[in-house]
Length: 102
Image (cartoon, rainbow, N blue to C red):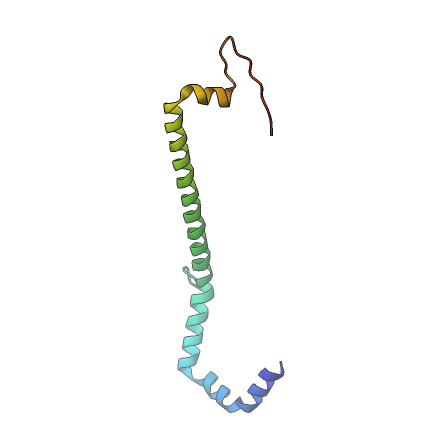
């Protein structure tokens, strides 16, 4: 806090002329309008960018899941009997099935 106070005391006349400058006032007003009041304000742009990143991550995740499901589908197509035995505990009439849970 002392740094700001010291800076203000040392540069008081320069700050007053800056604040009285109409170009500075118009620029400051424009920045405040763009940051807080405009329909495409800066805060909403940041939020939209964050949403886009999340959606892209979700897209990658779903694409990975699709690839896994396609691989599993190919495996099922190659060996249907094995898949049925492992996932649905199907057996032949003369077999006994023992389920070991880990």
